[in-house]
Length: 318
Image (cartoon, rainbow, N blue to C red; front, side, top):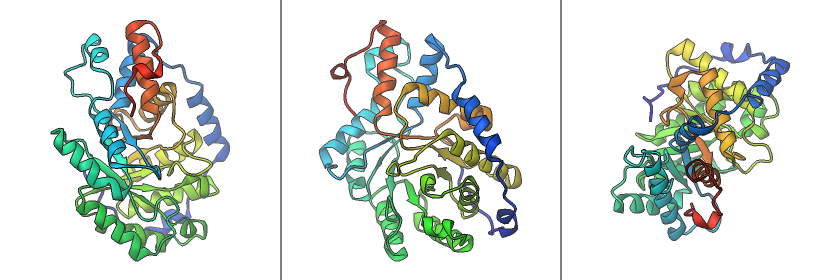
C-alpha cells in the first residue's frame, strides 16, 4: 500500500466551487472506451499487470471458511504455474493485490494466508456494507472488529444521505472517525456512485473523502444497479489529481462492480496511465474490485500461450 493520506481540514469553499462539464466528461469517456487494446505479448504483459492489481473478492451470503480458503489459494497462485513458466514469469511473485471478504470471514482469510506463509493483505468491507444505513456506533465497531481480526485494509461505505442532502461537514466527520477506527489499516472509501445522482455529487464526495483521510476512493459496492463506469471514473480520478496538486498527497483509485472481461481491465489500466500517470499503475495506488474478472484474464493468457481457449473446467476456480 502507498503512504497514508493524512487528510486535511475540511475546505467547504473548495467543495462549493465544484463545477462539472458533463459533455466534456462523456466525450472523454467515449475516447477511453474506443481506445485500441494491445495485442499478443503486449496484451499478455498488461493482463499480468492487471492480475497484480485485483482485490479478489467474495461477498456472498453463502460464504464459508472453505470457499474463503479457496479464494486465498487462488490469490496466491492466480494464474496456472505452467502458463507463467511458458512466459518466464513463474518466479516473479505474481499474486493478486489482496483478498476482500466480509468482516466475519476476515479471521478465516488471515488463517489461510498465514498457513500458506503468504503476506497478501486481507481487506474487509465494513460500516454497514452495502447500504451504510446502520447506526454510526455500530459501523465504527465493525471497523475495529475487522482490524482486530487481522484486516490490513478496510473498505468503508459512505452514508449516501449526507452526500445527497449536501451535508458535507457531517460526511467529513463520519469518514474521519472511520479513519481513526482503522488505526494502522489503510482505508478505502466506497462512494456508491450509482446512488449519488450527479457527477457534481461524485466529485464533491470524492474530495470530502480524501480531505477526511481516505487512502483510496472506490466507485461502488458492486450491489448497486450502476457500478464502475468510465464517465464516473474520469470525474473521480480528476478529483484525485486536483487533490494531489493541492496537497502533494497521492490517493489511490479502485473501480469495482461489473468489471468482468480482460479487455475491460486493460482499458481501466490505460485510463489510469493517461489520467494520472505511471505511478498509478501499481497496486499501491490502483485496485480492481472483482470476483469473476480473474477467470477471463487467465483464459486470455491461456490463449496467448497455447493458441486456443481453455474450457472453464481446465482452470482452477476462484
